[in-house]
Length: 85
Image (tube, rainbow, N blue to C red; front, side, top):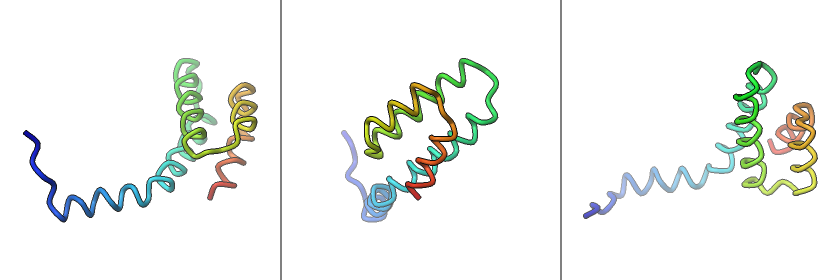
């Protein structure tokens, strides 16, 4: 049986969801940095999948997401991230 959350825990959870969009943009910007430096094709594939999911969750227009991911354009991805800040 799950224990009820304390007011302190509820505060932590509330702050997380209040800042969730900012956290996702930060994670996406870290992904851009990793993509620029990545040399392993397997890791690159995983990073692009992660970027695709993050862009969809941030409600970036679908055409822009598909163009960026299909072309694997890190420059466009970086521009999208800078527009989100």
